[in-house]
Length: 117
Image (cartoon, rainbow, N blue to C red; front, top):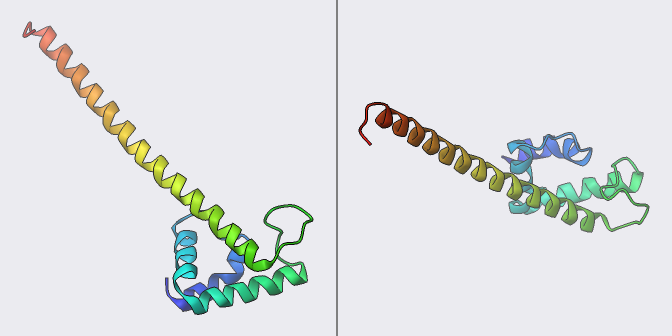
């Protein structure tokens, strides 16, 4: 993601309008790697939280520094995307194992039918 696209998506991120997808993952990755965009995001987030526009991410009345809130949000999304990657790998492994089992069953019945075993 480039800086221009990032800046266009800042409000979508602050108001939780970016779906949990590659777009959000790219947005967060850019925020971590581009200091100027990270500072801009922090500034926008601080302004919106101060005005009461942005939703409180932890759903409590306790006030937290906007920078700390952003760190918590980033940590949450990092954990979420890591879990999603693990689940995708597990799904692929499950499909591979299931496919091997079906092939083995078909071969077993094929050889059994023609008395090869």
